[in-house]
Length: 344
Ligand code: GH3
Ligand code: MG
Ligand code: MG
Ligand code: MG
Image 1: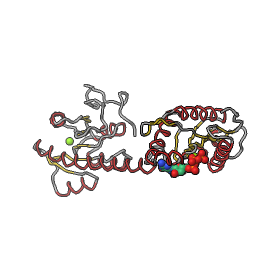
Image 2: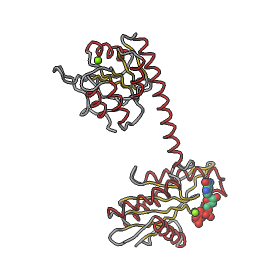
Image 3: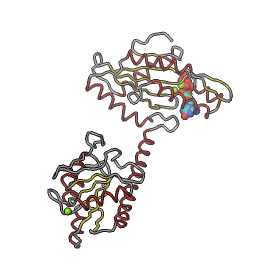
Image 4: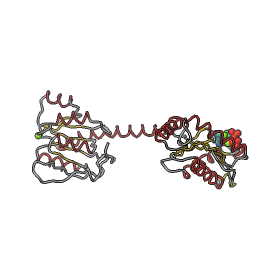
């Protein structure tokens, strides 16, 4: 869904028969706490102007159109969580507008209220059938309109909190709660996607497996809570070392982390791993008034499209694990990978 911006924003025009759009598109997505952006479709200029005034007075941002067709054009460019529509209008009536909005793939729920002089039971049923949420007959009292809009606000507010709760749950489900890194289940889904993309476009990628050296002794000497806090700091350090929103880190096991570097060949992977090794070794952790340091060993696997015909996430993890094992065997606090140097 398009976000509002100045290019798609409404224009004021005095030309007869042309769309009269008023209001700004700034913050038109209806994200403010209590006020929703409202789209009005009304062909009668007097009713339209009265409606605009009372809604603005109540603090809403308002955009109005002269008929259903114009309202739909505006809506397709900018999402509105609330639409007030007249029934009888030229070009497209309120029922047509309502049906079109309901058939449109929207970023959120649209609360639609009919404001019309048609008040027979059949009319009300027809409007509700077309997807209206509420129906108010003209002439209406402004206080009644506001009361009905408040009902809409409650529904939209509920939808908003539901979306937020869903998003919170989504984030929790992919995050390691101790360190804030992605969790293993996220890695299991994301890594094959990254590998598939690299293979399809013929781009390189590198995968670092990082394991803290003698971490058990930190727990043994200072306790598990101190160990936990070191793990958090290690992840913070990794996040600072890699490219924000391009590379990512996941907790693979207890004190083991996988770091994905996209568009990075083995040479680049080794450089990042070495930078990370140095940063980790330079950090000091103050535990019970005592400054301690840690080191880590890192194995770097790479997919290089000019050399490797095939690759898979499993093969990359295996390669990174083998190089990590090598780094441990050769004395820890070092980086090993394809063509990895022997320097510490
Ligand atoms: P090496 O250099 O060979 O990697 O030695 P190490 O002691 O780091 O490795 P080992 O696999 O023997 O021990 C890993 C330790 O990590 C043991 C475990 O108690 C600790 N650990 C794993 N998960 C957590 C955690 O969530 N919090 C804390 N505090 N410690 C953890
Ligand atoms: Mg009309
Ligand atoms: Mg380990
Ligand atoms: Mg370890």
